[in-house]
Figure 1 (cartoon, rainbow, N blue to C red):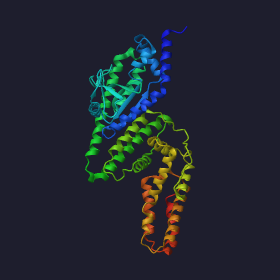
Figure 2: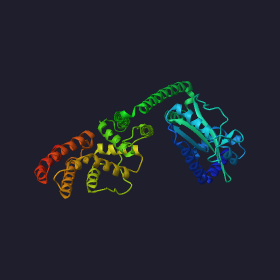
Figure 3: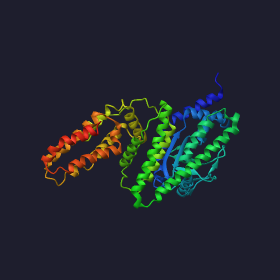
Figure 4: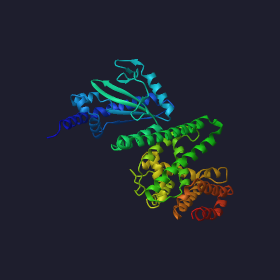
Length: 449
């Protein structure tokens, strides 16, 4: 015969399961509310939430003896404070207080029992009469606010936390190493000392990141080019260091792909649309935040890259270039690693980013070439023929040896400048005909081998 407490747990889980559709709708509404309310603030990053899983709820009921505290599963569910857990994420530890003050300012309508509502959505209330930040059992501070949603007979409790990037990371460590480790109590003092040391180091990282961010923001707009270069170099190094560690752990050896990460960073910022903006700080933080997630994940380097749909190219040159790369993308480790990194950082669909990268690569390869022919005694038909011929040579260059070094920025610039240099001496169609063989030799034989 099953113990009563397990019947209690089973009935509680059944109630939660029956409310899953409602919980998901409420969670989406809350997500949209908090995102729309705070996205305009520079110190706000994003909102994340989770609906308590069956295993997590079962563990909580047993760990905290909730089957004794409440008379029925219904009563437990009605009083469960973190059925939905929300986390507002910000950049730095100091930003947590800023977010909390934003919340205090927004939720300014006093309700009963310490709860406050807001003028934008009266269904959402937060308990703001408690001192914040709270002190956790581990002795560290956390902004943790009880909330409730009440609308059309639907009543759902939720918990709202405010966390900086390093505290999100710290929370994962604390939860997975201590909270989930039931044996650590044997050497509790040792664990506390180690975890305190880790927390101190994370605090130092937070201050260093804030110094970098403030430095980027404070740079004069006249130094935009320098700022852009510094930021890209920093991000490229971070990406390289993360993945070289992952490669070593997974495969047991290291390779140098620093130039490839430079190309990835260049593409990411071009795609963001901020290439001519004086401020790259927001994109910098977004990518750092994403890299922080990647650093905590396991990465498999022996898997095939797959695409969700057929690839659509904008023109014949892009198609030939893309298809040439596709032939080696799952055969050449460096090409495979390049696109694995690119796809993982971007988080979009692989196909869309591959299409975007090929378009980016075409732009880099052909940059300035057509303009070089302007003003010369060459008609449009002849000009189209010349451009088509050059594109054909470039494709053959890639086919001769599809080496990833071909797409490194310095090699693309060298190839591009070699083509432009020859075209500058071409003033007529006849000049072009006499220069074709030399240009072929430069592009295919010099750069393709």
